[in-house]
Amino acid sequence: MSNPLRSKGQNTIVWVLIALLVLGLGGFGLTNFSGSIRSIGKVGQTSISINDYVRALQQEMNAVSQQIGQQVTMQQAVAFGIDRAVQEQLFANAALDEQARLIGVSVGDAEVRRQIVATGAFQGLDGKFDRQNYALTLRQQGLTEAEFEAALRAEVARLILQGAAVGGLRVPEVLTATVRDYALETRSLSYAELTPDELATPLPEPSEADLRAWHTANAAEFTSPETRDISFVWLTPEMLAEAQTADEATLLAAYQARISEFVVPERRLVEQLVFPSQADAIAARARYDAGTASFEQLVTERGLARADIDLGDVSEAELGEAGAAVFAAEVPALLGPLPSDFGPALYAVNAVLPAQDVGFAEARAELAAEFAYESARRAIAENAESYADLLAGGASLEDMARETPMQVGSLRFGPTSRGGIAAYEAFRAAAAAARPEDFAELASLEDGGVFALRLDAVNPPALIPYDEVAGAVRASWQRSQTQSRLAERAAEIVAAIAGGGRLGAQGLISTSVGKLPRGGFLEGVPAALAERAFAMQPGSAETVEAQGRVFVVVLDAVHPADPQEPEFASTEASTRQRQLQSLAQDVLALYGRAAQAEAGLNIDFTAISAVQSQLQ
Image 1 (tube, rainbow, N blue to C red):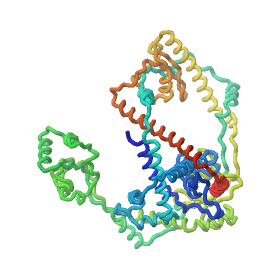
Image 2: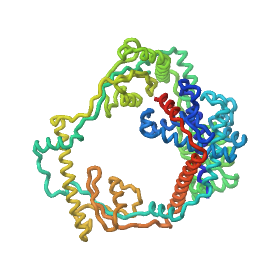
Image 3: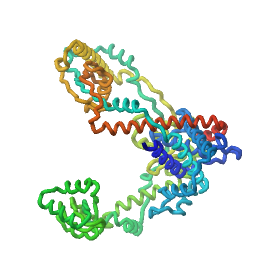
Image 4: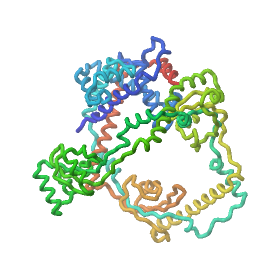
């Protein structure tokens, strides 16, 4: 059985390399800490540096930010428990590092060198390790080579210790079989949807008193969301682009530098099937010409798929000696045997991509627009610091509009705001998080623009007057009444089936499904219907209400996992692997806690608070 930590270990090493390189120390200043604060605690003699805590905390906050679509603040991180989770992980790692130190587990220079040389971030254009690139990359991130190599050495040693701790784990077969059988169980079912046409009598006409009462009783449905009155100033490259112009020499130089974009030779979509020898290639071509084998069959016989032989769109020069013949052929065509870099080959020529020749005169407008946009973007970047200084010096948004090219505006911001400046995710996130006491600060937009905003007022959710939503109230009442009456009719049908009737005999159009897998998808039907089917007993009928629709579902049969099905073995293997990984994580967590208890745990809450305060 494979080591359950093999892939986990490789991923962890990659995490260490990327975390140290990408997060680094460049974006975080520690100058406010006193010289005596260097760590957030230790396990035995192994300390956790403040820098390590900052890196891990920022990485986890960034990961959560990407998941939820907005930047997580330190306050939110504390509320979500992100800080505590990071601390637990760091102290668990420190406990393992301490254990490795006590029992003498270490990593030699050769292994450290191998890990570094194999890291893509340190390789040059030739794909080989570049010593200067290595030093420069670390220096740009505020790391010395000694610091990085010490961290890498400790991580590899920790993985060795983890591997030893969980290397002999086995998952009970009964546990794997239980989960496998649960996952592969299928069910046959029948269902029918009830529509308003099934109702014997139409809905009664509601009185205005009924509708007003409905409006009051369902206030949440007719309540406007919170909105925010926002004042802002902004400046985008598009606003400045018109004033940016380039002379002919500049545009011609740009055209020449990008000539490969504008002048493109003819290309062809080609597949290349290589053979071990000229004789094999000739024999294959003969079979194709005789009609005894298709090109697809020839590919399959070589143990390949069409994707394996697809060269994509290629130029004549890229095909070498075969280029002239391929580009002279009518399309579609099968050519060969012809030479290739890997031996004699058959070439399938599938399509022609015509040559493109866009002259300077035709490209000029595009080049001028791009030059103007980039010039405007650079101008904003060059002046951003001065704009920020004006705001920091107490300039109001209105002052900014008078003293800079920034444009002032206002809007009532809400969940559906998407036009103008609200089309930018950065602005929406800032507007949603703004507080009345905040000072306006310069922030960046996705296209290179900048903005600053002020929260003028928060308008709490409010019930919309009945007269303004009378039509929506009537529609809501009708939907609810229809839903209730359909549910009553469904209950009657369920009772009839329980008494021995059949779904097909209830005057409904029913649909039968054979062997629906757990988690399976039924097109055009809410997922709740399939979910309910897997909670029912064979022969039973139930009502399913979902997404404003009403169904009656009958479970016809339960089919256990079939060892003859193709997915049986793969599901069993993947289940066992997941269980083994979960078991390994539990064992490592217990081992880490035991190591902490043995070595002694010391946490500096003052240092932790200082770090989190600076990250506010």
